[in-house]
Length: 330
Image (tube, rainbow, N blue to C red; front, side, top):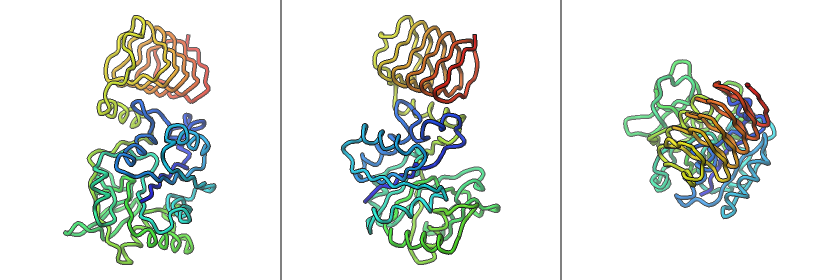
């Protein structure tokens, strides 16, 4: 079994942060989106990973090499972003005929990975959504077997959406369907989608069974990223190395503060993630994500997303600014 994690996307909905940082490396509850995915799969026994990289791909490679030297990592580059289906097709020489476990690089879900791996069928993760028109939609019969998959249908026949987790036993059939779709120019909304490939597999007689995920955290936009951060902080618990190390400071859990931070005369929390080597002085921060090597002085922040290497001094604001920014609100 090989894990495939596509992380080649530009993350345009999280601009300006993703101008300098891949979406998968944005801090989340003391981790990153990518580390949460890798840890889930590693804990279930998967040790060989294929990362599909593109935009800022060298940062993904450096992160994996530094934080996961024990895994067998392959990197496949997608120079032209033509959809997830196109990205997956590039991995065929590395996959060979092995089974694959695909998790999209902005997808954090709670589910029993070991149980999915033990199931004898190919499986895809699904969750009920209010508006299925924005997702790949799964239709299945009374026996629980998938009968049809449609990408972003205008008139959905089901409210069960694909969440971005796929265990495929018949990888040869998956790649054959991807080849057919690309050769014949079968695109949906301008891209080669994995939904079309799954539907092709079903027509060829492959049995695919959906499984319901317990939770699905959206990491693609600022507001939902902050909501997901708050939920995951409660799940992973308080991660403050030393409560007494911060001078005249109140910590309201749940909070995650990275190593090397200097915090004084401040109130931090609830639901705050602060990256390593950040300085906070005379500030109040709640419901926010702060990057690494940031400097915050005399500021009140609520529901804010602050990039790395950032300096802010001033008064209360709600901000969404990228890396390497210097702002004085005084």
